[in-house]
Amino acid sequence: QEGGAVSATTEKTKEDYQKVYNAIAEGLDKEGYDDGSLAPVVLRLAWHSSGTYDKETKTGGSNYATMRFPAEGGHGANAGLIVARDYMETIKKQFPWISYGDLWTLGGVVAVQETGGPTIPWRPGRIDGFEINQTPDGRLPDASQGAKHIRDIFYRMGFNDRDIVALSGAHALGRGHTDRSGYDGPWTFSPVSFSNSFYDLLLNDAWQWRKWKGPAQYEDKKTKSLMMLPTDMALITDPKFKPIVQEYAKDEEAFFRDFAKAFGTMIELGVPVEQFKTKEPWNMDTA
Ligand code: HIF
Image (cartoon, rainbow, N blue to C red):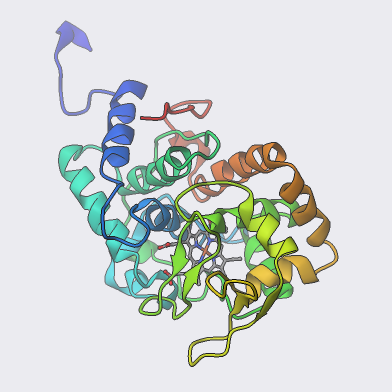
């Protein structure tokens, strides 16, 4: 900048974004909340803010962070994400220059990397949109459905079967909440560590319908402490999805590689490429 003046419009560097990353990472551990970490719900925010994308109309996606507005924030699929948005607001206060779309997607990167998952490529450039940019309800998946529905939803975003199965491993993290989706319980025994155990449990545990008043979900026969959604189970009843589940259950490295690529793509959906501040995505360091 001429004369070395520092103004509010000074371009931010990778180091500036690394500071945001570190701040998000620092506050994730939270004693008494769920399994002790906000990482799962922060990851779910990154995905729900991106997964509204429609490749035909080029609407939705992570660009405008429209979940800030009451209509989209109130969509049934987004129940409970206020926890993650409120946490992100504390970060936004420290770094007011970052856009919400960049902040929320960076949160997803932090959540995966800080729980032991692969490095997710990420770069800044999203801008805050307006209420008019909100997407209609119904763009995010409905867990009570099957393989056809999952394909409809993820093909609409531009993903293929392999991407769908690779992304699905993120359910290694977190749990269902009866006061959010209505579903209940974690998918794995270590819901705050990112691993391929979702696939292993899905394939190798015995599952049965849980008998309860809540929505139809599966429980593991042995401990009755884990759950699978109907959409999760579709990954092993569908003949095209199942071999990919088998591959990732055996080969965590393949899962990590494919997940990183698919999730990196997911969080860029809806962002015009010329808006990005760098040509190539960055690898952010773990905190
Ligand atoms: Fe989820 N998902 N997801 N999900 N999800 C829930 C929770 C998490 C679906 C449904 C649910 C993906 C795909 C799908 C996470 C991350 C990802 C819940 C429970 C439901 C019902 C919410 C609650 O009650 O708190 C469906 C139908 C999907 C399409 C197949 C992604 C691949 C797996 C894209 C993805 O990354 C995470 C993390 C959570 C845990 C949130 C928590 O608060 O613990």
